[in-house]
Length: 203
Image (spheres, rainbow, N blue to C red):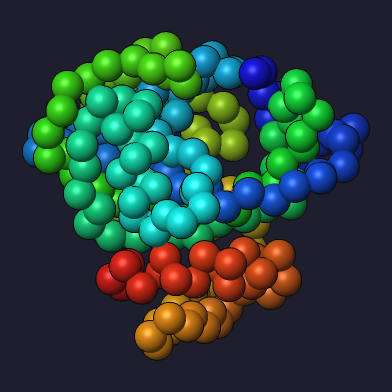
């Protein structure tokens, strides 16, 4: 299935779904970043995909990374929570998706690089090579080019994905979750839907 990314495109079709997704920002002991080349749009990206029913967020992050790259990971932190109604993903099956994306930091714990049905190329790359060596979609490139320091990368992603919040506060009490700082109703609904998963995330 082929996808087309629309970013601030006034001619983009109207969205008909919102999907909770996870991505992983994986760095090895030398500082290299794990990238895939997607089969659906032929561009480079960090690993990730949709959360499945019954899954913890961190379980989804580990599964998607293993499926797409062959690398086992340990989730070490949370980069951020992102959603932008001006970034729409149009699929050839008729779905037009607004993604709600949770990005985790992670480190590799094992495995061997391999491709999959979703990744035609898998590699470790130095952050300095991202700007010249790899075609990355426009919405992702500015954030990836600010990989060091982490605070600059996060701030760039906040600017890229819109002024959702200056601060995110997640309160986890038992099976419940409360979030401060998001004006978006869609984001609140999505967070409530995955609230049982958030108990596995240490912030």
